[in-house]
Image (cartoon, rainbow, N blue to C red; front, side, top):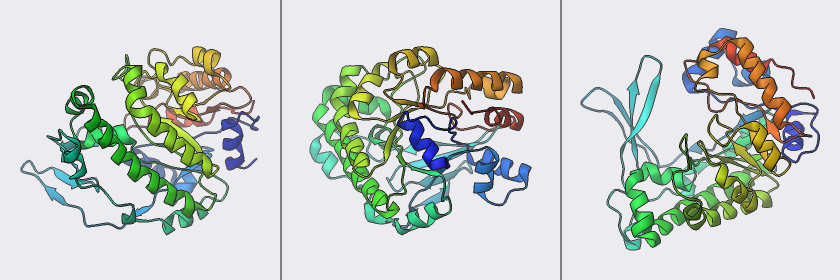
Length: 350
């Protein structure tokens, strides 16, 4: 099987020849790994780890975005959505935090309509096909922050939660504007890919490490319809929908399945996402992705412990497919290279 065939077989529970794998790391880790192995192309790194999924994204060609240094000497960058991020350096890495929320103070539907939104024309979709050609045998994935995630960059989360409760029509219209952009943005990517896009991956973090951020009924009210619209679009093009949501989201899994979500990512080490119980209740109805813990095991465990946990996830979640191997989140700078190697060097043939 090619990597692409393997991933598609896993998602459709059609007996892949081995468990497929994905890879994600923060930029500094990718650079460190490339230098460590003496690689000059990202594809070489994917091949070293036996990774079956490769990312593509359209090139931004829209209006020039602001970039400046604040009074503390920190770099500040503007997003094409209009929010700004300030970059903070720690002893581990440099991280961005949202420092300007352009939708602060929104109260009415009229306020929502008066705001500035990105234009799908701001992207070079022709570049998608060129990027796909770099990975002829890989499954191709692309994604963008989902409606909820984007809103929390544009308006502070507590402020948006109050809108959901006190001004639900305003909150709903704001989310609709996010979805309107994403439907057209993804449609153009899928068209440009000419059948080569395998997975669309919106990221919306609906959970904390102990619970959902809001109740199931509220998720159904504000997010179920938009999720269905997105999955319907993706499936029209023969692609799969991979829902990224960090946190304890188990109560939402039946509704993800009902909406047509094909893959849930990540399986995180939180209450309710234990692989044994996930397989027992949902096995065969959705594919699980990730699970090798980036919070404790990968940065602090031994290579043998990483191998043992990887083997457990493969044994537990792979049933004629249904599992894509990866860390629970992107590799951070505190994960030793030997632990990354231990994860990917496990025998994935079943």
